[in-house]
Structures are given as C-alpha cells and as structure tokens.
Length: 220
Ligand code: 4H4
Image 1 (tube, rainbow, N blue to C red):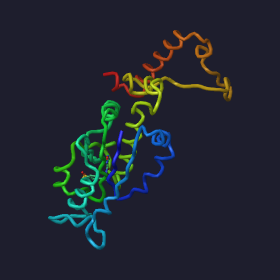
Image 2 (image 1 turned 30 degrees about the vertical axis):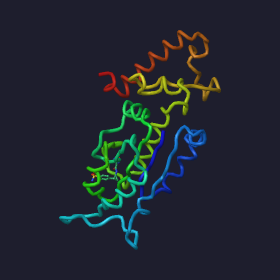
Image 3 (image 1 turned 90 degrees about the horizontal axis):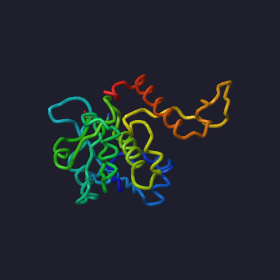
Image 4 (image 1 turned 180 degrees about the vertical axis):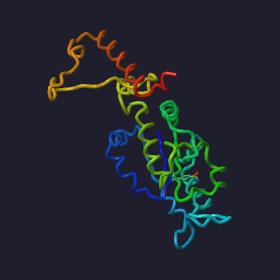
C-alpha cells in the first residue's frame, strides 16, 4: 500500500515511523510519502492560501498550489481522499475496504478548507474522523493511515484483527494477563481452565454483554 500525504505540516507525521507501522514500512508492506504542499507554491513568499472571495473569516488554500502537489504523485490507480468534516465518517468497514487499495493520496486541509474547484477536480471521496472541526487534516490522515495499515496483508497477523472490536460487529471481550491476582482481583477461572471451547463461549458471551452495555446501536 502506497500512501501519499499532501500536507503543509509534514513534520507532524514523524511519530508514525515510531509505531508498529515503522516495522511495516521497513518491511516495505506500506510506503508513506509526505508531500509538502508549500513546495509547489510559485510565489516568492511561498504563499499557499488567500482570503475567501465573497469575504468571511479565515484563509482558503489556493487551488493551483494544491493541484501541482497532486500532479507530482498522481497515478492511474490512486484514490484521492480529502480529510474533511463534511466527509463520510470513517468506520471499520471503510477501513477494511480502503486496505485493499494500492495507492491512496490523502489531502490534508487547513484554515477554512481548500478552494472547491480543486476538490471537485481531484478528490474521489471525502472522509471524516468525526463530527468536530480540527485545526488541520493531518491528525485525521494519521488516524486513517494507522487504521488502514493494520489491515494491509502482512502488517498484523490474522488473529490480531479477526477478533478485535467491530470486526464481528461486536466489541471485544475483556483481556487479562499475569499476575493471576492483581490487588485481590483474580483472573476469571474459565481463562485458566485450558478448555478452549468453553473459553470461546465465555468470550462470545462477554462480547455480547459488553456491546449491549456500551454500544447497543451495534446490535441493531
Ligand atoms: C477541512 C476544516 C474542511 C473545515 C477542515 C473544512 C476533519 C475531520 C477536520 C481542518 C480541516 C479540518 N478532517 N475529519 N473532523 N470547509 N479537518 O476537522 O469542509 O468545513 O477529517 S470544511
């Protein structure tokens, strides 16, 4: 999977290389290329935004600068995603669908957004990480890269993703590890029984219980 990120703040993406994605990048399972939109300004002051036509507060990113940054990385099989509060909210299904793509170009907006003409010209879909407005699209882009990369073949073993929350439409069962007793609290006996069928049944029951309690909407 190739990610090209069009951003004004490439330095914000440094932490990604530290995470488990660092290993996936080393193993060439994913490739994250950061494109600084400012490098494509032809203005001597590297101008990338201007005041909105029709007046109003804030600044809007200029279409020609964004377009040149896009042209520097575009490819036949690229899907262009604009991180925007106006987009479809990212969920597990969308994450798994996107993980099957070969090349994603992520456009990170700023200020009051981006000139509509370049959005109309290059964007295939808008994706939001939630109904709130952030200062920039970089954190949403990192959320998308992290969640999608987990489903890229070979990044995580199948067992890690098969049983986690949302994969089977339920929230994940509670997890326990050593020590067996923590502050007087014992690990549920069934998990020490070694009886795998009963453990699976207990885990399924707990998943349904937790989902009913925390996210009944998932059961509809
Ligand atoms: C983009 C603000 C577009 C407003 C932005 C608009 C999110 C989010 C986000 C900085 C940028 C904001 N991106 N999920 N939530 N004019 N991005 O807040 O479309 O309203 O993804 S606009």
